[in-house]
Image 1 (spheres, rainbow, N blue to C red):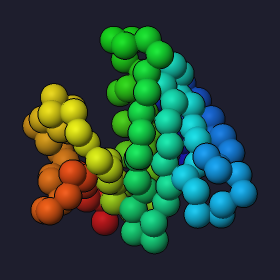
Image 2 (cartoon, rainbow, N blue to C red):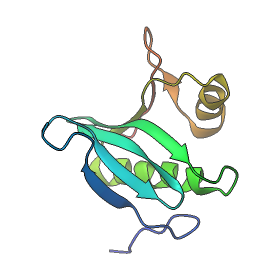
Image 3 (tube, helix red, strand yellow):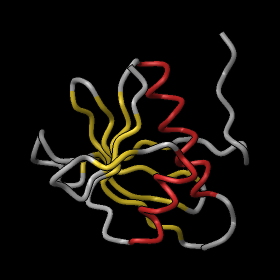
Image 4 (cartoon, rainbow, N blue to C red):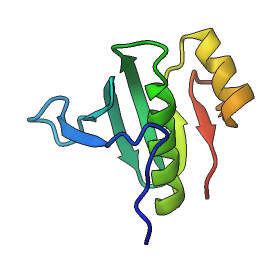
Length: 112
């Protein structure tokens, strides 16, 4: 099986849980200059937060590629939670194939 490579050949680095003493706490991650929080549900991977220390370098795209690849591989949907930034919301819907989850500030991209 071929190893996945993102656009900038960045590694997905899994960190510890956000609150290490809580087994339900989200995981931390880093991909290039981006880092944040995520967790798994039985049917989806949920991206809670993305921060990019160098805006405009394309590493956000790598984050999306990593999560989308993992969703395809594991037959899970991809949820981006609590999207308060309206520009990001528009981008996720118009450019990345997400749809809004009614009654929430979440979007989902279906892979299963």
